[in-house]
Length: 167
Image (cartoon, rainbow, N blue to C red; front, side, top):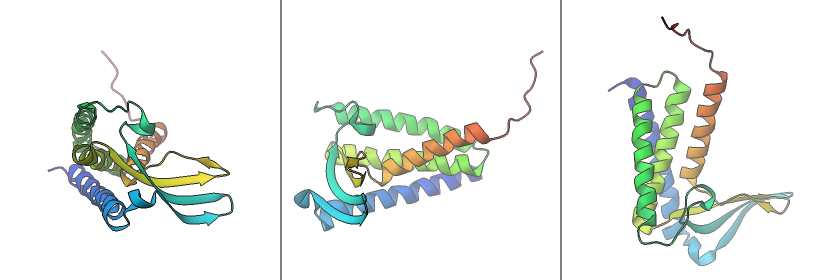
């Protein structure tokens, strides 16, 4: 097994465990659905709350629906994307790309588990400032966003390699 693949899979696994443990804590220990909202941190106009939301769509609730197959179709699509990312991970050339792909894969699988178990994704982190609330998210969502941002940064800042000229 290539070193990049092994490293990326270990990182994906760690993020997956962190995601599932936090969701267990939210649902079964804190029982957040009963509380609905727990303020955690308030620094001036900026705050962080635990707020329970069942996300039946994808990012920002896009493509949400209550159809019987909707959550399974979204889960299958996420698994297909994760499969393509695994191929990319096996050929990763930099540490940044390795960890970024691991983050996206781990986050995607974490949300797939939710879709299969609950029919929706457990979102619970609510960051707000000056009366404006960002979308409620979870550890898996944060991993996916950070991974994608790292991939974009890598594409923008990595020096170009010498390309073979066409004959």
